[in-house]
Length: 242
Image (cartoon, rainbow, N blue to C red; front, side):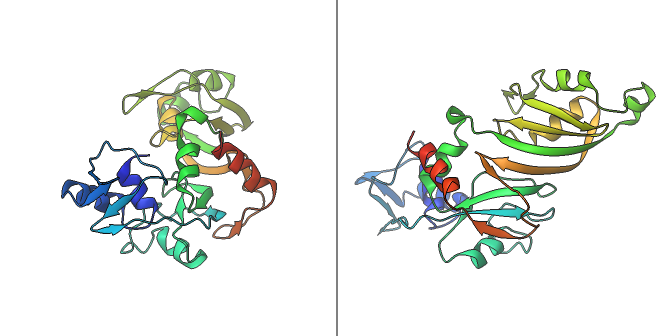
């Protein structure tokens, strides 16, 4: 993975701070000056500010039911930051696998396993994420008699749109009722589902992640967390070894 990301996941500092250290020539990889395009793994010798970087081998895996209002940034000075949840959960430096918007809720996978995180987020492995979504129609949609979800909505949601230079890919959608649906996708573009819905004249009013990479939220209450057990961990490790 990219060097700044690895330094951040190892718990030395934030990714932004790691980028500054690289700019200041304070990072060395395998006795060679490192740059932003340097890719590293746990087998590389990484020295940051004169100290060898070490990573935990005691890997931990949790899920957390994130409520609306918690921000997935890891800024200690932000009272709404996820970092305050992580600090209470484990002495290991955990981090979220991917993000959920501050105004979204549901399953967050938490770990200190950087290699697994990298693979779960890599487009190559196409890990499925499932969400339940509730929307409200725009005034224009209502005026045009298009105020509820129909099979046409499913078809149009699978038409690609461009988000920050990348096109959305096809996804699986099933209607729950006139204004709610379930969607499974493998991409994780910025506010992707909200943008796809807006493109069809609907505003998302509630978005909840129900599963990620085969791990289910189940009946876990908001703000509660639990360690992954048994096959849940085993299936993730299999993914890691691919």
